[in-house]
Length: 492
Image 1 (cartoon, rainbow, N blue to C red):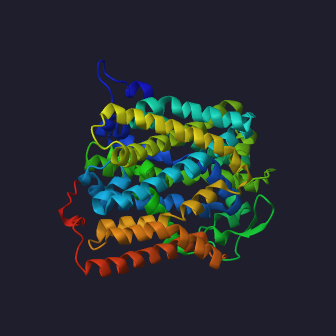
Image 2 (tube, rainbow, N blue to C red):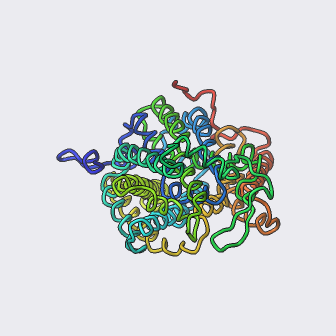
Image 3 (tube, rainbow, N blue to C red):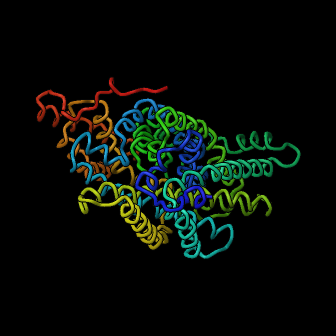
């Protein structure tokens, strides 16, 4: 499907808008579906189910708060992005600040996509195939990489987005079916699914608390060490603190997510696409968290939390249905891999290569060729590194924590760049450079602090840093590149 929809007419070749922004022709339902398909990957099916196994429904805060974040981004962020007609998030930073900020953030995103996102998705996908089908881990990782490369490398974002429309139907349908069968098996034939859910809530009542307080829920990690779930989801600050930093950064500043909205037909379709994705997010805890709680209540004989979902598929989903559920899982993995590959190639090609390597006379077709080559390099590197994640406990939390080293400073740059006219380039650069050292320092100085709380503190410090430097440099005047939100068209 991806290769067919992205095929070239006879005598024509793709240009950069075709390859990187799907010809700017995506309708809302394709945008929303592609957003969810890119988001629901192995880190959700495998990683979030593993967290559900360890800490319960509280991990669903990531999903339900994301629905609210999507609406905020649709209303306040998207109009500015589309007005600027940008290809990438670093490009916006140059238009608002300067080229130094663009280059630094482009390099950061490339490193995160290759060494954190692509690598972790490949590992968890390979782990699921290893547990469910018995395939060797390395062979599973290589196979997933080859399938994702097959259509995304040729077709670009158009192939990715339109394939996602089909994949999201499979992954939501297959995921709901897995939850249904697991609850039905848990409750027994006499009580059915509803009775199974009621029994689960009674048997594992501690795993259904949405707000966790210090010392309330203790669990053993993959090494058998007793941990406090509060360190992962610190009480009320989940609702009013660092989780907002994580969600606004992920959905509003993340290239491989926001790129779908940049490819919309118009602002109205882009907004509706994010709203559609928000509605779908409300369903996700049923698909990716509840199965982990079922595995916990069944006292699954597994060593790692991330094995909960594959174990449940193998034990409680019949062979016929297991194929559909497994197809849903593989669809989610491949979709995310393809999305990350395309976004990494977009950033390298449009932000680094065209801007710094070949500034004069580069053809549209050459940009597409460069993009394909970079995507291939990224997936090869990630494939080589993925098996090294086998020793980590709860890969979903690994992704959140180490992305959280940089997201507070980056979100501060975007928020003040979008909505505060006095922010200056030097202030933004300071925030970008200091985000990782500040996060590392707080982790070392206050080792007992929950990482979401640490993210909030670093975000507040970054905002204060930008404000102080900007006011000192600009003498209270608006920066010449400031965004005038009042003049931005708000198509509804």
